[in-house]
Image 1 (spheres, protein in one colour):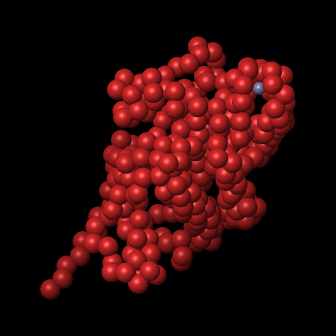
Image 2: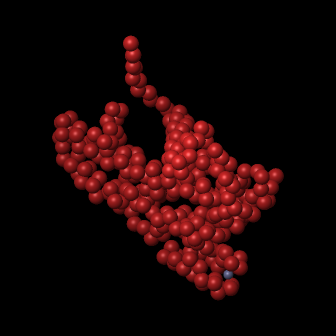
Image 3: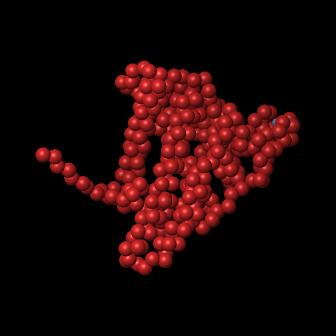
Length: 298
Ligand SMILES: [Zn+2]
């Protein structure tokens, strides 16, 4: 006879974070194993028995995160911002209006609440999928990567809150770090005071802060015309490589962020020209979540 018990657990915040990390790692391993099997089948080779380390590649990249584009890599790769939430926004607003019109305690209200929760859950799933694809691709193609230490928490509290939640930088970085650990790659975090968008990546001249709308600028030192984000990504690469060389133990040790300047954060430089609207980010107060037993695909 088979017996099955269902339990519902209420982990506190710390445990929730630990569980999320564990599930994240499990998912990375599972998806990668699945991809390896698919590739083997395509190449008519036997299924791999255990996960293999990725072959070493010569590439190193700096990554500039933004909102007009999701990220620009120092090798010129541009990752466009998918803006999942914005696309789903209209649908979500309609669902929320519907919900607010239903009488409290009514069956229709419960139904409307599930609809709002489902829309949010779908957006979160799609975003996670997309983040996994992007981070896996970057890890496969690069041996070492360097990121800026953005104050994601601080940004998420401010005026840009929804956009910051929408792009999921914190998750992007966490996934990169997990995959770096798993595949023996390197990730270095460049100090957030580093003026990545003020320096000329060609001659090192410090050109000064630029208004947000400036997407291209000519260096007053050497005259080279820069794409703002690409130039920043190149600076992040150079700073990350320098930090790594200067770190105790040299390049073999994990990335250590070394403050290069004791200057204040360059506020909002990469955040582009976005506007925020009234809908709160997924998971924020006031938005119903799916309850156990409620399925997105219902
Ligand atoms: Zn220059």
